[in-house]
Length: 105
Image (cartoon, rainbow, N blue to C red):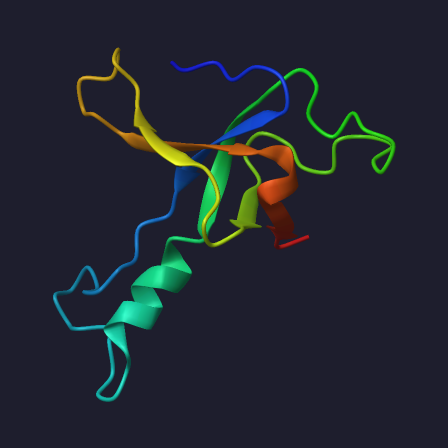
């Protein structure tokens, strides 16, 4: 597993479902598929937090934890693959300041 250091956050991006499990198409007519995909790519689950995340003067304590679903900046981070993962799961490494909100709190 990748371990982030410093002020970095490791996120597993959420995939956008285009088709339900029953095979019925989820997108309704008139939905802009590109916009839906872009929105889906801005959400993810935190899987790692560096040791100095949110350590600056503006933050008194980390405001997001491993397992939280977050919204992050549109152009945040960089896609990486864990070289030890045989399934080649895609992750994103981003700065702590790119985390905009925790979803569902």
